[in-house]
View: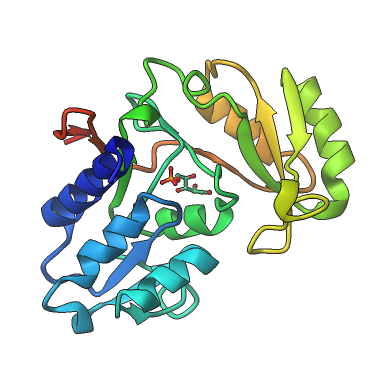
Length: 235
Ligand SMILES: O=C[C@H](O)[C@H](O)[C@H](O)COP(=O)(O)O
């Protein structure tokens, strides 16, 4: 296992071990490569028949099933005891950039109704100060498909240095389609001075479904370090 993979696993296992509520009934499982280890750890719990897990997308749903966990929907369970998810970048205020793996809307929906939201990540995700320093691919923004040209134009007007419709590359000709049948834009604003304000400005554009800026939502963040230790922010 590579150093980064070990770091992801250590962060995820620690986060579950230290935060999983003994009497949890509804648990959110996020998306990405780090949360794979969250699902694995939760799948090892002796009482896994006593709670239901809510996914944040297709991959997340598969993780829940593959780990023998009970699957539920956000429509059935609109209130969660806790949610775990990864991040692309985390600042010291626990604001996040998410959506690098093309999931963000369902992640934000689930996190927004969880009593506690715990982030798991490896050492590369820590921002030294502002968001947009470590994660330079731009803020992921989920949009209604036919709004992409107007939203791109508006993002430049808001100060984006670069904004691109995310393409499928060799895996798909044309733009990526999200789990919600939308498009994604990655908009690079450089180091973000005011995360809450930028989120509000982008969210107000017609056609924007949700931004990958998660402001003031996370309670704690667990980082697997290169040393093998786990650093906790917000403890
Ligand atoms: O779209 C993807 C999600 O927001 C992920 O949680 C995020 O990209 C972090 O993924 P990973 O754990 O693979 O770094």
